[in-house]
Length: 182
Image (tube, rainbow, N blue to C red; front, side, top):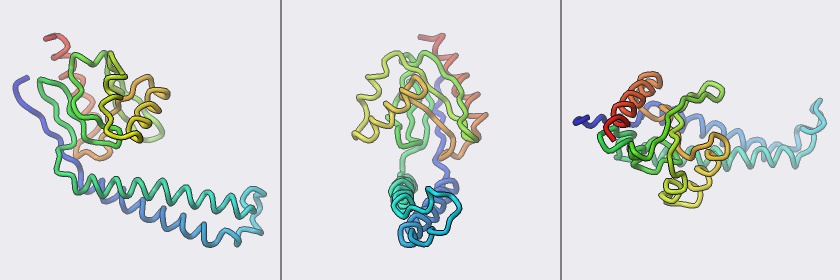
């Protein structure tokens, strides 16, 4: 392959994600403030204000972090995904580590969790790629991926301006072509 394929981040998808995060942070704040108002709830667990406050706090922390990440991605000038003769340069999600060389990849599989599809990039040396993580949080995310899916690397089209099925076909075709060259 002589050409470079660049797939940009989708500003619309990022705005939607940020909007959803804001709504869920506000809901978390509301839960923390109004935890005592659940005393009459039919479920015993939800009558406990500490449970309600804990759920609200977790919502604030998790969706606050995803909102901040979305804002950072919105301002990010890097291309979401680059596919070229070197490999796949991923800048599409929180656990992205940059270049994944074709000769490091052993297999590419598709996985679906609920309605979200993603590509699992199986690599020969997982620790090499986890070592590229620029933060402890990113390394933990990658190790969690490793435990759940057998690889630290995954790509989704959730933040990309590209259809998942087309992305899957494109990456599989380029992997097969470059695998045969190496």
